[in-house]
Image (cartoon, rainbow over all chains, first blue to last red; front, top):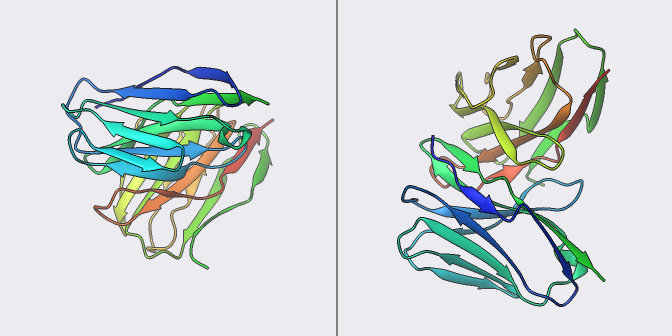
Length: 109
Length: 112
């Protein structure tokens, strides 16, 4: 089935630096969702993007959906230690959901 | 207080034993899912169910079984046929057609 490829696998930043994770698909996506999983926790829904070229912001987080609806990105401005965790993109596939492998973010104070 | 509950949080079993993981939701969601997560890895779909008394295999269904006798409940049995059962198991639910998934806290299964 469809799969989204997510990069990078790991990202280590100094607090205050920016962070970006990318998801790419070989096929057009109907929509894409983003989740955050804190260490030891469970994934929590962040946002869903539906429209081509859509950009949504949540405080320091900016989510983009590509014009061709084949890629998406999550950008965090001025990371904080509370941003630590793994960020997953996910795309609906018929009646189920397919998750990217995730990007694990660590932030050095 | 609406949500998804999974029990127990930690579970230890001896090799060769079947074990059933509980997942209950009071969100009135139609669809429920089971995922497996290995250390440092993403989520892999085991089984999902869109309605009561119906379920479909995901990518890694071998060695697992499920039932959906009630809308609120979707238990997962890890059988002795599962060759490497030690993992973190996550249950999720969603309103049919909406897509946003709500996850339970997960069960960490260790097979000794």
